[in-house]
Length: 547
Ligand code: MAN
Image (cartoon, rainbow, N blue to C red):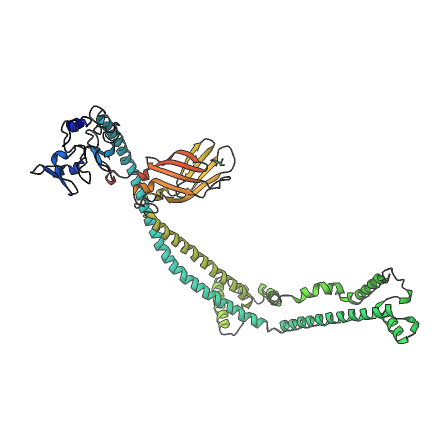
């Protein structure tokens, strides 16, 4: 039993024989009833205690259920009814602690007289705000539904585009295959025509001349090298022999060499301090002049031979052959009036004649009776190849368009993308702007945020769209997920991180940027409103009902 004196500091409710359901949440009230024997079983069923022990400010049940209205048991909750507003729970530890809890506007968390019951005013304020919010959501959600409509239309448009492009792909794939086949065949015809041209006696002879010239050039080089080597031997002999030995054979050889090479006799040459002949340069000049004299007759001087023979031998004889062909056939194309039958025919029969002529020529070509069109076969094959490449690139762009449309459709009604209802699609790349201080801030949704200086200077990227709310406790699809967007990897801050933006969104009738704050250096917080977040009232989740 509790001694009478100890009761003195007890809360008024307890002293006055407090209601046993005081502090009990409405859904549990029915469980607070005494048994016939005047006892009560703890809510966890672990113990039976006298009914009088409930709310007596002494903790008897292991789960603390015997003290719903006092702070006697740890880790329990107290329920304040808040009549005129909405009931709320607080931790029981805050009951009777001398502080008026804002959650309990009725002041029931403290002994009576300590906290005023302000639930009427709080309730009214709450209801006013709630009504305003409901009004906003009602209007906002109408705008939101137009966004959803847009997404559905977009889906239809994309699906139609996919369907058409699927058909186009099918048709164009066949066309590409057909054109590839034509290009391959035209090229092989053109190859055969070229082989035929290459059998022309003129071409064969030209190649032979060219091969002979190349062989001659090789031989010539070999002889030049031998001449240089021999000259060096004779020069050594000329400058090194001893005239005192009177060796006539050597003298003859030296004299002969001097004459051939246009050199003065060695005995007349003044030796330089380094032992070289002073007139050796003149000798070389004499030699060159002589060579020039010998070869200049047909314009092919030694110099020209050295410089141009290689180029001449590198001539592209196949191109030359085709050019030659065109050249030879050119006057033929102009036609002679004498052999142009159309000049003798009346105008009315010319079309029939032309048609007949084309058919006949084409037959004759088919049966190999005449050769013709060879000169155009190279051009034909280029055209055919071009037509094939053009068709192939047209096919590629249809395929790209088809792929992009499929990706866009997949993003449309995706909780990770444009939302379950596709309500965000309408705002894809929608740009919000606000001028704050020296900058205009621009954020294009799902794209990029930028900081544009108002008085000149560089615009900084504040980051590109990275994700919706990345918080672990927020699931894709739930409202909180769409209340935050992250923009990352903007222009790097001098001596700092890359600029980035956290965009906080809430329901509003307009898509508007309300504020921009640089919370930390180069970390920006944008606050904006959008109708996309105005959920219809019947979708309201977790709202607390008014009592
Ligand atoms: C610029 C702006 C500022 C930023 C500084 C950091 O002036 O981007 O917002 O704080 O660079 O150097």
